[in-house]
Length: 78
Image 1 (cartoon, rainbow, N blue to C red):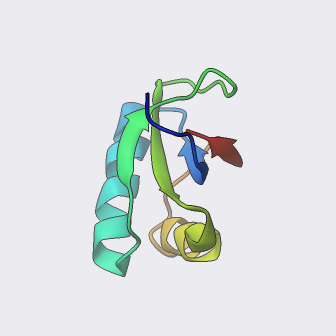
Image 2: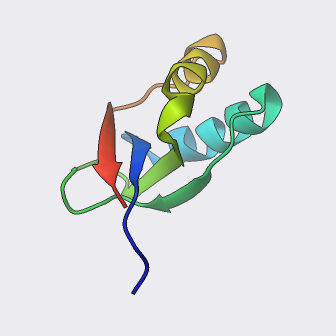
């Protein structure tokens, strides 16, 4: 079993927001990927963006710069 690491996870209200976040992160060079929302969080669409913990500020900046709405951003072991 893979060891869990602390990551920054952004959860979204809609799938469209999750897809927009993926695009925003690609444009702004924020590493990460879309994942199912971890059980410790809840979100409307069930999809979240997961990035290394040290990328939190860049992630928030990319989402806000592109006007992507998010439900919550949390640090979670995934």
